[in-house]
Length: 337
Image (cartoon, rainbow, N blue to C red):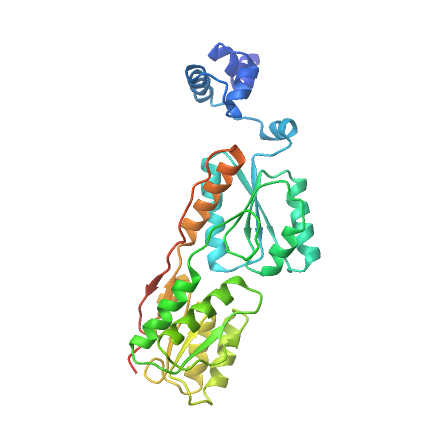
């Protein structure tokens, strides 16, 4: 029985030290990537860790360093395809580096809710935070708080603290609007996202830039709420108008709802009205007609966020990344005028 218990015992840092022929303090320094360790000593310790399948006690290390081996994700975009994909990539990249991820979803984006979410992550002693918070007011609150950990944002917000990563929303919106212009459309409406949302403002700007550059008339954007239900409502209402031939919806859900509303109102897409979206959610290629849209590389953004955050945590040179350029996916919902 004693022998069986010995075999089942989890190896400790002292077991690693004994096998490597060093002190347990040296093993600790290796685990914390201390620069004073000689390369040959570090390699001997790492070989011993692998041989024993030693797993560091992250909770104990947090007590010593005042930081857990955890990355916090602040998400104000519950249920949306893009952020969900980014979080999955953040978790994969963090796990590969020995970090876990804890996600706090904001039920609302009031200053009180944002503050409480940050305090929760602070109490958990996260080593750094990735902010998936596309509203300007979230960054206004963050600027006024002493977070005490590096922050990386997946939205480029004016005045945001820390490092920002983003896909070039303006370029993507300009490109999809120019696509409609190239098809001969000159009366193009924009079904925009809500005010205060960074993506909504960027996509509206790209749309307006393309129309101005083509010397085409601009229309007041229609403010939506990102949902297919609002898109459907907009489609049934817009069917009463005859002053446009194309609509650029700021996300795919509103575009899909819009096409449904047009269809129920007897408007043929794309023969009478072309519709394009943004994001390239998985279902976009399978609705009818298949939706022309802008593809975003959410997984790459998630991986890059972890690269930047870990470099900041470790005091290393922070990598610089250019904006991820969205790519158009041309399908059947857009056609020549």
